[in-house]
Image (cartoon, rainbow, N blue to C red; front, side):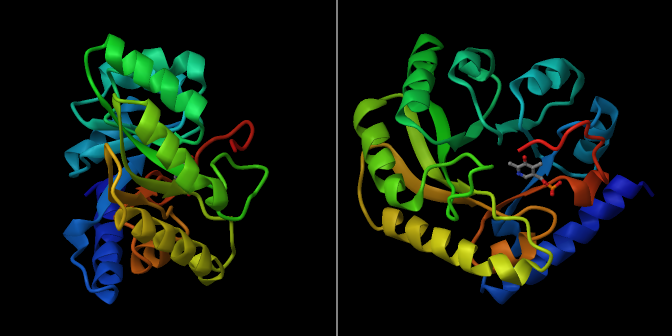
Amino acid sequence: MSLIKDNIDGIRRRMDAAAEKSGRNGDEVLLIAVTKLHAPDEINEAIDSGITDIGENKVQEILDKYDRVKPVRWHLIGHLQTNKVKYIIDKVSLIHSVDSLHLAKEIDKRAANAGKTMDVLVQVNPEGEETKFGTSMDDAVKLVDDISAECPNVFIKGLMCIAPLAEDPEEVRPVFTEVKALFDRLASETRERVEMRYLSMGMSGDFEVAIEEGANIVRVGTAIFGNRNYRQEEK
Ligand SMILES: *Cc1c(COP(=O)(O)O)cnc(C)c1O
């Protein structure tokens, strides 16, 4: 039995348990395998072990690996520069990191050119950490309003956040609770092309707490593939 498959099976069991605690089924939560800095061989092994969705945080890595990875849904989960939208508009199924109207407008334009619409999440930065991208909680509603009003080819499908690093995931539970409350508020309101369906939060160190607080997408890298070889920690 492969290590990657063992890891995935173990994570799914932990996801099931966390979902049950919040009165849901584990299969209502999507596991995205975060494959940044991992090779196509490893990624294909994960896909053979049942992974349907993978996440990359850099456009260049998507382009490098795209033809060498088995059919799978690709997610862009990292910061996206406007000048790179054109390279991935026909490759990814969900962009998790929309945090400005400027970026949304570029996605809108490129989607229109490609004759398609694009599903996105709005990334929020609940603690206002300077090392992280994302809109502040206060500005998030206005951003959703503006994108809804001005980007006819962009469909907002939910919210994404990256919690602060913590030794003990319990420390960041309030962050997840706060983002879930914003998600619920937006879900209770009606806007064109806005449907609060996905709440993308939780990584290797905190996915169980995130699920307990309402996440239905978790993005897990290290717990599946082991440590990444960074020259420099990405942020
Ligand atoms: C790297 C990354 C993850 C996965 O982190 P792990 O701790 O390895 O699970 C999740 N989300 C984003 C945006 C990332 O860049």
